[in-house]
Length: 283
Ligand SMILES: Nc1ncnc2c1ncn2[C@@H]1O[C@H](COP(=O)(O)OP(=O)(O)OP(=O)(O)O)[C@@H](O)[C@H]1O
Ligand SMILES: [Mg+2]
Image (tube, rainbow, N blue to C red; front, side):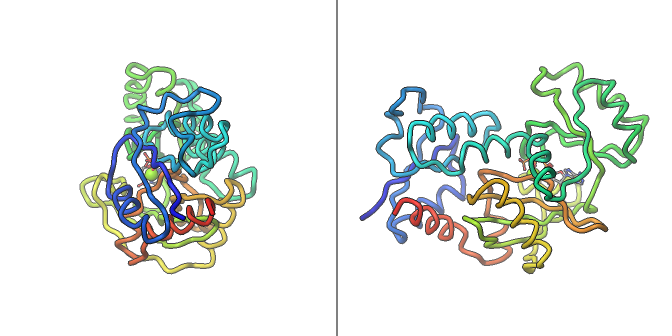
């Protein structure tokens, strides 16, 4: 029997279209539900109750965890779990949870004030990266090469942000412009690709233009991804790694991963892998 799944998202991109297109091949019907029209909170969650599962793909870094939490609490099968989404939305909490679980992450300092910032500059060596705790698409992620520039960059954080936007991390610049992006479905690493920044921008987010190539399933990558899944639980994740002299470290985990880049670089049918996994769970 066909099972019914809601993709809860702010918009439809390539990934959502692929999931909707491939769903019938896997015994699913997937509908897009705008994340602005759920009005969750009723104990029976009428806006999602009739779906067999809810796939949370909000790009916003404030909506996903709230939606996942209320849907899950109302008894609807929700992917990813609210706990995992909440952790992924907060770069400081995620780093701390992974580090506590023994998964290597970059050294970092939580910066909530100029005093914190100055201490972080003192304790860590340039070049450094300043980034929002709650952020996405590479926005405001800033490479600091010189101490003298750092103070004026921080003026923007201090003067233009609200408390929520002022929460930042400072961490060493790692990976030399390269990240390994891993797509995890369930407990499995289904594809990995190396992304290199496009040239005019130092960051290598897909949204900013980058180049990619398939990365073989290095046992070290498999191991670190296994550590992430052990901590967050099985789910659908984009795990971003930096290669360092001491091995891989987890930069971040995306709970609503874009998988076009990995799919294109590796030839993996990522949408089918996701659909199969969701179908198994709702069986
Ligand atoms: N410590 C670092 N060293 C080197 N490059 C970094 C570092 N942190 C971030 N970058 C670069 O900046 C990009 C964006 O940073 P990051 O992935 O941490 O946040 P984000 O992409 O904005 O978050 P999200 O992936 O959730 O949208 C990375 O893809 C990488 O190219
Ligand atoms: Mg990123």
